[in-house]
Image 1 (spheres, helix red, strand yellow):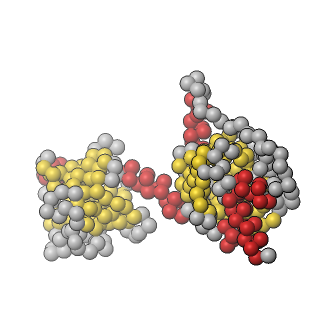
Image 2 (tube, helix red, strand yellow):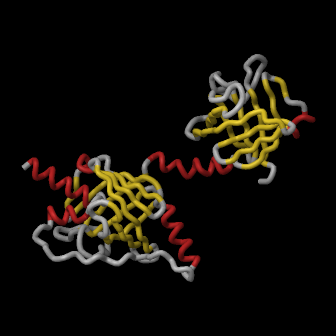
Image 3 (cartoon, one colour):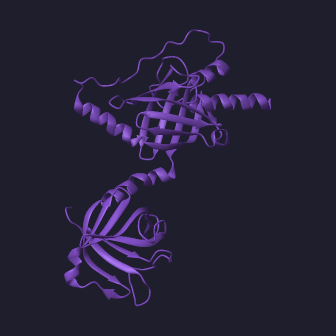
Amino acid sequence: MWWSQLKFVAAVLFAVGMLGASLFTVRMLAADQSPRREAPALLRAPSPAADAGEEARRKAELKKLQGTWNVAALEIDGAKIVGPAFQGSKIIVQDDAFTTISMGAAYKGTLKLDQNSTPKKLDLVFTEGPEKGKTNLGIYELDGDTWKICLALAGNTRPVEFVTKVGSGFALEILQRQAEEKNSETLDKEFSRLQGEWSMVSGEHDGQRVPEGLLKLWKRVAKGKETTVTFSGQVMLQATFTLDMSKKPKTIDYTMAEGPNKGKKQYGVYEWDGDQVRFCFAVPGKERPKEFATKAGDQQTLSVWKKVNP
């Protein structure tokens, strides 16, 4: 009995976890030997004459689904499946491709969306693995970090509502965006905000302020995750950097790319004041500053910058 239950759970995970709907069909619906007709894709690659606005809306919808989604709840044929059975199951969406991971197995395919229908429709087209060439039909609803899917496990009948009933052959799945993915878009925006060329508004080191006449000679340029600081055209610092917005104050870490400190870490904090950004850094190898201030002997640097061309 225990082994039968385990095989049932495995079949459900492979089917509803989008890891191979026909496996579920073979194990659970073996009595139905009728051939499966492949369902047509909802949206095909747009022709050169395709409406640009519609394509933009499709891409915008796909963008909302990007990232890693963990299965939070599962129901099949009207029966709720307990959490431990699908623990660790997830869907990873990148561009219009998906990878599903469950019980150590991974299947890959392509998402086809119709965001204009009510409810919204999706086709899961398997491109790799035993289900290659097969398509599953479903509907979906996206509410922030919650993704609800109702999926047909076999055949070419698409669900029309987010419910399952005994014998329906439908599965209802609730997914939650993985925690770090929630922050990824915000972090990308933060990196984007730091891009470009910056001029120094004020600065001090070891408690000594930078003379007013020298401020205009300092320049900071950020490109991607690399930054360069120059003084009168001479490179003073080159480094890659990472950010942590969860800390208070926010933290920034440099990894020196050139010079005598190449490879060493330099720890800092930063904050925004309108369109200006304030940094406070320790020297490489020293502990991170705890506040935005310097004093004689602490070897810390405090600087405020404003973007040259906002």
